[in-house]
Picture 1 (cartoon, one colour):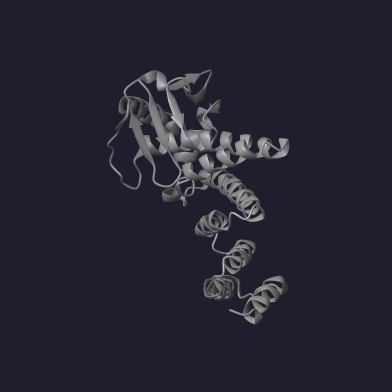
Picture 2: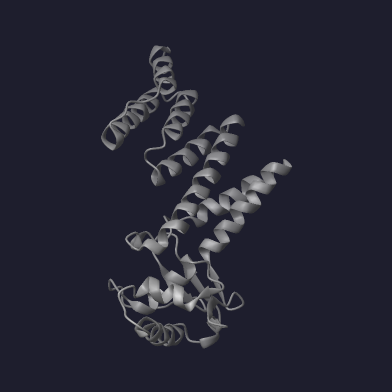
Amino acid sequence: MYIQIFTLGRFSLVKNGTPVSFARKARNQPILLAKALISMGGRGVPKETIADALWPDSEGDKALQNLATTLHRLRKLLGKAEVILLERGCLALNQDLCAVDVWQFERLCGNADRFWELGKREHAIETSRRAIDLFKGNFLEEDSQEPWTVVLRERIRSKYMRCVGKLGHYLEEADDLKMAVECYQRSLEIDGMDEEAYRRLMACYFRLGLKSEALSTYRRCKTVLSYGYGLRPSKETEVLKNCIMEAPL
């Protein structure tokens, strides 16, 4: 038996290639337990830590009792008790029996960084693209209200932005402008306030001869910065916009 757990974007479980059905109610306790365990690293997580996170208002041993019941239900849902280990008071996902997309994503990002540093550009490009394709949305974006998701969500988001930014910059320098445009667009889908991505996108459009698209990107940047932070585009962005406007068609 093999379990795949998808956390980037919409949460889902797949057992032996078949999606696992579960109620998508707001407080599905077994699913929340799986999410919390992954959010806290998935290995060596003290049961008290998870119990306190999921049942913060419980008194005495009630939180640990809730955890024991919920763990039993989660193991039943997954189909095998050994998928989630409990050893010496700590919980862990059995990596021999399950795979988690966010862990694979972090490995790919780390490998891509090493390939860039070693100058192995083909490997870096391929690995970066695999990481970007794996990223379907923010980590557990349906659970943004849960405080225990914040640290990992921000870390993954930062790694994604760095990964797509590095690839876009390389493709731009290599004159693969259409692919660079795609990278910067994907970056802005996750962080619509990234002025650097807007500026690089403007430059790529302009070099492709798409002056109207470049200026449209500037206007979008200006609007987003104004509504989001009450700011104006930076001097660097304004200079680029003026150069584009003054250039002949």
